[in-house]
Image 1 (cartoon, rainbow, N blue to C red):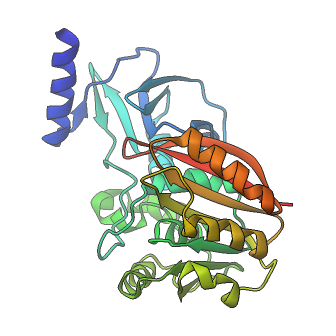
Image 2: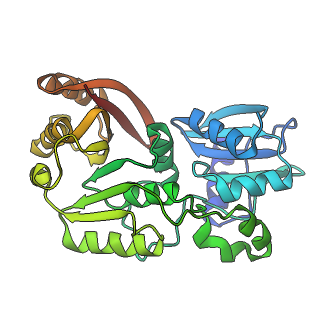
Length: 318
């Protein structure tokens, strides 16, 4: 009964937008960093890279969230607020409560004229880090709603992830200027493919607001015709997200593997993100189906997106 009351109180505070939140107190640490479960090692590496030091930390899993307890001073928290792409929230300890540090929900992006993306930006950036996208590559995003294409552009151009929320923390503009170093010219081609004309137009307008429309190339195209628009062996990485009601492979799924086999360079990779209810069966189906192609199963991970479990599958062209 006590545990139930705590959970209800937690929920009510979140719904009422309280400036503090109940989490297990840890007297050894003054800061709490929150991300959703999955590839949390990427988040730890990112934190240490941003701070330019190793951190002492304690990790606890709670309701599919990863709580990272550590010690940071004010400027280090500010540094993470401006630069982290995988942290959902930063909190600091004040007496017996954890309070949000300046902003809530760091995954929110204010460049969107209309939110059509199904994936949380912090989840996408974990995958971007893992895939090691860099300049001098050609990246293909199939059936994309902007989730991958725009975040890839923001990452490659080194645009601060809270760039569009800077007015909310205007008193810290000196720090904003300190950290802002947008790359004006980058050598990369990011292709966003979607057959829906209206959705593609909206993604393009969102990309303009996100300052990345100069490196994203939009193609209104059904998946079956991809090999008519892209040269064989020209793509370094392919990303796609599929919501599947069953575990059997349909014609669109099969086209993903067919085109990946044709379009990827040798050692190029396909990053297939799935939402399904029987991941074991669908993974087995994929492993069996790709035997007809020069595609090798590399690895798979569970990640969480707004508390829903997804599966990331990585295949390599050999």
